[in-house]
Length: 125
Length: 109
Image (cartoon, rainbow over all chains, first blue to last red; front, side, top):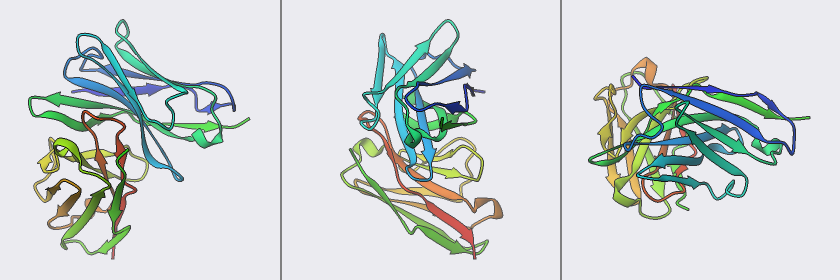
């Protein structure tokens, strides 16, 4: 059974960096059958996909246009987790942040089938 | 970027009734990479349907998805008390960025 466990601070000051980690159990961050995603949710923006990382003989990443200049998603194979870093945050980045797995099978991508528990992050001084 | 719109915004129904939710894309969704999620208060979204019509593991057969191109539908054949929630569609797959619709709330009439 695949599970994702999120960790990280719930309060970040404006202009600083938001950092969250998603620990994977029951699967591998370097699996050839998965992609590892970050999504956030706020009342003003709804559900917003932020980006993903995945391994297919080498590492790939994709990011949403709205955060592309500020975001990095990094895999850590030694700890079997992946992380989100969002730089230069503003109050607009206040949201519940989720990590999630997208599973790839013979029929293609299968949607976000496993989610972390969510982390409420508030950007405030 | 593909934009998704969902209708109606709110659907008020009674247990046992049929629910029909719509999701429309601003351009064709490639390879039918369209998913539906259910979200209850305080919980993460749960995958119901992927590939427009395939039920995810453990999802009851009262949930069904259909559609292609730009028009998709989620149908709940007979609403159970636990089905009252918010439902989101999402386009995903090989061509990011991926986007979610704004959601349809199914509440008790």
